[in-house]
Image (cartoon, rainbow, N blue to C red):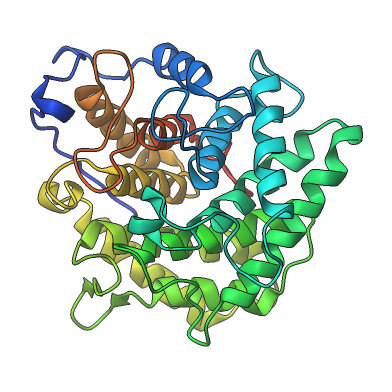
Length: 358
């Protein structure tokens, strides 16, 4: 049984942040990759961290971690690629923050950052775990121990944060996206060989897929600031994960599989709506994260479905790319680093048969 994950995205003229037209000409069908990657590398602080803008004096763990994921997905891992040293410095920055955080808290970052205000107090822990899970297998053996310890620490914090309904966060402007990050992090950690409670993984996916109501064919937007896109993206990535894991799992839950199929069909229909794809109405970090999650979900299906989605998403990103090659949010998470990293991750996603997309 294949998921039906159709998405017909309509491109419309857009204006970049600050009222400046996007740099990409209307004839461009794909965004430039070299300039945003170069910008991201140059924006990193000497200690390996990133903040909202270049060489930020107020870095945060969530932004550092998502920038690190972008480097990995672009081929600059802990041991390969031109910018592997930048990735290793990011590992040290994130691992230090995690291991030095109060052990009785979920959070690994002091309060008050922009990602926290929009995605919840513990977003740093969630994104840090995903970054560490993806980078640990790529690190030279002599550099793995500290990163593995930090990853195990993050897993313990995230598992403690899970509520009875399977969610991890209820605060922030759009906590559904934080819940998607938390679930992604635990699955990535398990794929990297870390010890993760399988029951918590299942509850996390069930919670995300539960945002879709089969009777009304709509998504619950109470934890997504009233924005369908955010709930749909969080739901569909969980549905794709459940579907993809089923062939290798003789204990796959038939009800979970049926729900995954329903979510995929429901979300697929909504992704054909340009109004829904515009999210809040303009492009903020939450929209960029939603596109990233949706691309990863569609990569699990592959084939013509993913090819069509990827083509249209690249066109969308090309149209809103700024003159210096970066992306910046027009609302909420306005951070250039965060939005640029999320867009690079979206561009790097490729169709895959199993496992985490690369």
